[in-house]
Amino acid sequence: MTATIDATGLDRQVLDPAIEADVEKFERLLAQYEAGELEEDRWRVFRLANGIYGQRQGGANQMVRVKIPYGSLRPEQLEMLGHIARQYSRGWGHITTRQNVQFHYVDLHRIPAVMRELGSVGLTTREACGDTVRNVAGCHLAGACPFEVLDISPWAEATYRHFLRHPYAQRLPRKFKINFSGCATDCGQAMFNDVGVVAVTRARPDGTTEAGFRVFIAGGLGATPHPALALEEFTPREELLATIEAVLRVFDHAGNRDNKLRARMKWLVDTLGIDELRARVLKERRLLVAAVGWPGGVPAVIEEEGDFPAGVSAAGFQPGAARPGAVPVEITGGIRRGSGGVPRSDRARWERANVIRGVAKGTVSAYAHCHLGDVTADQFDGLAALQRRLGAEVRVTNRQNVVFRDLDEGQLPALYAGLETLGLARPGAELARDVVSCPGADTCNLAVTQSRGLASAIDTALDEAGLAEVGGVRVNISGCSNSCGQHHTADIGFFGVERRAHGRSAPGYQLLLGGHLGDASVEFGRKALRLPAKACAEATVRVVGRFAAERQAGETFPAWLDRAGGAPAISAALADLAEFPAPESAPTFYVDYDEAGPFTAEVGLSECAG
Image (cartoon, rainbow, N blue to C red; front, side):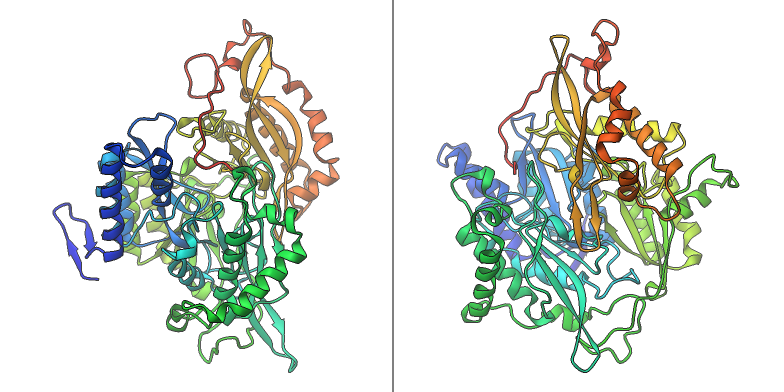
């Protein structure tokens, strides 16, 4: 594409004809809808397939979801996100747990202009919502992690390109999610998606090893989470895309189109059984060679860019050849205040908590902490300027932060100074204070509670208790049971519920403990007790404080939880927080965070449930 600089100073490209066709169709169908010529349900399906989502506020208010494949962003794209936030939304955007960026309160009639603006820098909203193949997510450290078997970045890119506007990706029984991880650590969260791809090796008869993938299928969260299950022991590189398409086709053929609540692929494990589901996928893959668009072989983008793992030289590398073992990395974790150590400066604390060092092709990576995943227009612009200045690669993470990659040690002072100016240099990204939250009742029709308000309260409470930078513990919050905040997978998870106390309705949360993702497996959190919303921050402080005080060297949160007696024992220790005080003595317990009046559970029609 040809690049141009327009009157706004933004670096733009000639619009892709496919994007222009999408926009023109949106304009045409919007006019038909407003003229009463297109039924509401048909318009909704089309709108969602183009990444445009209704809000709780109704009317012309729309949420625009922008796909950021595997989180990768160029400077001109960051600047465009800032432009969209400033000119079309409320001055800021929101990073999601699937590496999208969302903008709220966009007027429906301005959507075509937004789509064209985004398309001018190679971004799209196409298939970001609805019953489609959603954004292809991937580990944000792919290509910069010395533990990886393969750099999954070009594989995620190839998958994104293959399924964008793919005929089978448009009108599925329900949404379909694909995630990539470069090793069994599973930072890309493969283990609870419709298709989860993890890079692995297998031994050859001659004693060498071959790098490829292990594909997991039929995972999902929602109100009833299912772990993804292995399709086969090993999938060669040349069969990966065909395998993913085979899974998609089986879902399209066998998925439940009559009941949305049981339409996700995870339910096929219940109805068909995993053995039958595997057999159908493998049969579909074997015969897919007859399809006109058969995606067999190694995709061109991998042949062009390579998928060399970090920490090894590309010299002499042959696709599928044996890889040397990963080189150890020093991954800096959190610190505990008051532990007897020497107090550190703000920059030293940031460097210890937010910087990842390793071989990683000779580079250093560092996080910018985006509170609640929110980034203002000015911050988008500032991040773009820093990216250009440092020549870094930038990705958004599935914990709603931004990571700078391909740095060297000498660039860290400049990066820290730039992030500090932008208000993004707080230490603790990816640590205890880094609470993940869905949008909640701020904008979502399904949400019961204001999950963002609780996330801020927990952040503040942990900071005041000196626990914000404790490592090895993660907190996730959803405003309802549908797990958009991925509460099932967190060490400490909350989902919003309506409570009744003293004859009044009140905001509450179900506490879950012990969710864990890693080692190519997933454990979902176990229910503890239900709490008033205003008691959840104190409960979090108690649990994190006890973990920090009691854990043994190298002990994980799940291991400590088991040793402490599990969710029942922790629940017993928190029982005093579970009771609602009388309204006259503590009226704030009956008002949700960020609300001014009495709590009411106002739940509307869903456009995303399940």
